[in-house]
Length: 136
Image 1 (cartoon, rainbow, N blue to C red):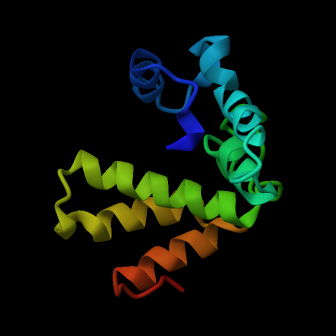
Image 2 (tube, rainbow, N blue to C red):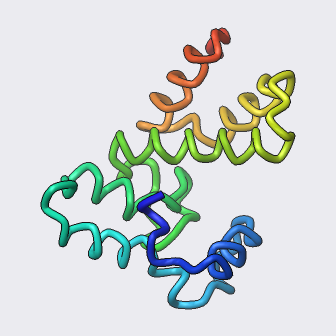
């Protein structure tokens, strides 16, 4: 994915070993969303404001616990929010080896985590895609 274009395979592994406590990340890992965005801006054929926002925000979280800027759900744009929810859904599905019977449990957990601001749009899109009933 373009959002991780500045990371080596070792950096990528280190990044995915962390689960919420970003204080131990190296400066390179912590800043990679902004560095990747800078790199993409040089390519006018693919650069857009929306792509820049997705790349810069791809590790942000609705409660403000993400990085690099610690944005909360009120400050993360729609497309970036949808991307974040979709990425988390795929990561959780990978953990259960794409066992689609686990999708209900996965979606329950994602709903608890992402039921705020623009993140709801991402959640509800996945519910619709999976032909699952949305929570009230």
